[in-house]
Image (spheres, rainbow over the protein chains, first blue to last red):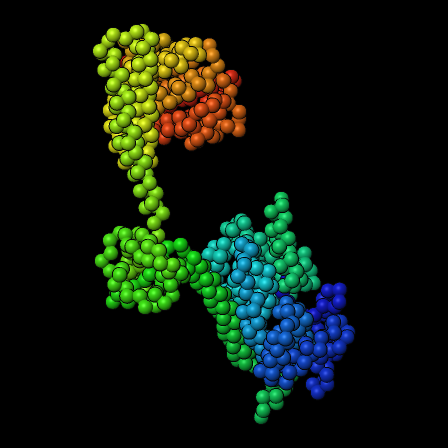
Length: 254
Length: 378
């Protein structure tokens, strides 16, 4: 479900290798063309080059101006921010860029999303509510942020809490928001057991709340989501919204 | 070193492996960044929600058909809604001297923007404006209501005075003629018919009056213990012309046994209203019943006292729910459609209830229930 900054997928959605065995030389081309990664759009390539040049303002301006010219925000997310963040993650994992650069790119993309967010807020809500969170102390909140934004675009009441201090904080939020869906992002494999316990308690305490799982931890084996008790799994933000919508549509028709 | 070089340098750091403290610092930076991002998102959603609520509030206040003014504690006008502006005119509101609201009673007269004199009710509510004490004035145009009230008063006056006064002549003069004697039997019958018609009209006018008074809350109930059996005798006597015309026998039962002159059936209520209710319901049953069929009236008392009036007949299913509605009649011509409506209205005014029972095919039954007064005599 979660758009992963560290991994890529090919045209049919197959996850890319976790590591790149042949890192590009520091002075060579940083953006991979072809191979396992889908080709980046021109805007995405420019955004990434500007990011890697360290020019946050110019990078943000590129994307925001495209949105101003009429590019739908969903397209900005899916065609620019998501693939660029995946490529950034791949470069970091391949030791081509530093963790500092990876954090810089992530923070800039979060800044761009924050600037775009006002234009996607919907007033006509569909009566459904969702909460998005990362399990444990995971710092990789950009993906779940993107998921929440896609739900917002589809007229859901959304609440992005990123990571949370304690399970009780999350339960309080689920109660206050009367959540229909909890989207849980798990990036680190060592958080899976914590996610399983959390899902079990959520389903006991909030029977009406459906839990959707996503994130890097499930990309190679989506059945893991089912094994830890989630009601569903989605590869990315768009898939998560579609799955959630279908869950409630079938509930209404059932 | 420019920014580009600095960040390029971070690639070198990666190659050289960052220290633990560098990683912790970076993670802390990202945590703060993430929290800020989430907080900003939430702030924007909250702002959007506030804007929606503000829009809702404004729609409600501006579209409210009442004129709404807010005066601060110094008596200055701080808010007037769109209705006030339309009613008075924008210029007049802008130059409004709020004193016109000071010391007003419950009603006020104002000219609207078209120059017509209007009557408005005034409601004053203490409130706050920007956390300071203020007064909310709600003005409602009641000109039409006042005109309707005037019309009702006129109708009441007409019923009470203009109709009832000449009716006393129609009722009393025949009696004088009868007392003087020297009349042929045919003349006596005719004069008695004139007198009795006058009485029926008087009862009808009184009934309308009571209904009107119950509607506007001015009827004063006189709750006493009332014996319904003698009242029923009066009603049956009054309706004897209809019974005889249609040859309809009426059986009265008390707790399953035929009632006798010695029996009584006391309930708590207003005698005048009971008379009207029984008159309406019995007359309704007589009119609805086919000629020659029997009507039964059952008095009973369990938790409450009940009277059940049954006659032969059918009511179409679609009519059941409308049986007690105003101006609704079925299967007869010339009815006002007020009989069952007024009966239930009066029953409810005394805390009772009327129900239609068509569970037995071919039988129409109306059941009246009230609280019992003294223990009914048997």
